[in-house]
Image 1 (spheres, rainbow, N blue to C red):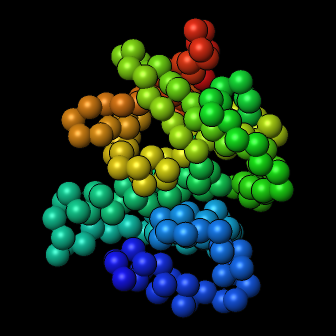
Image 2: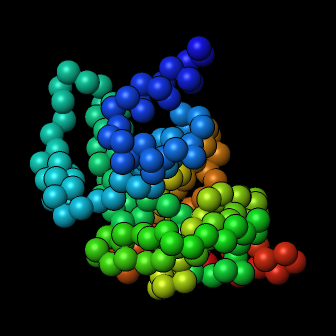
Length: 202
């Protein structure tokens, strides 16, 4: 038995029978974890209050270095910013390539509203410096009022997110992959969606 099979089996042992039935299509640890996240990783009111308390009450741990403390604090900021947005989402069906239709899935938003997820696909973005970035597993949610990029999803994909002076930078290694500017308390992406031969500003 390899490490993935052992991990998969261990996770299953801790799940109730009804949860196991919900995730029985997952065959690898990665698939199982993603399925569990999609079912249960929502931010309830107590979660929001807890995160806000952590944010406003944060104190540097003297036993840790400055960089470690900053990383810890930044994770709290990302979690707070990302309440209700655990996936990349778009209201524009025409933005999605490799679209796969899905029905019956619900999405709980930060305001406790519920929307239908109609499918998933990928979105190509031409960035501020002309590079093309592909966002995968973007949910198509027609009821949204704006397109949303999940900072948590970027963090899980190995990107680093930095904020300062009204600018958000998403980096991988030494390269700035995405950049956003603060407008009306939201960071707005500096880039355009690539639609075959055309492009649209986000």
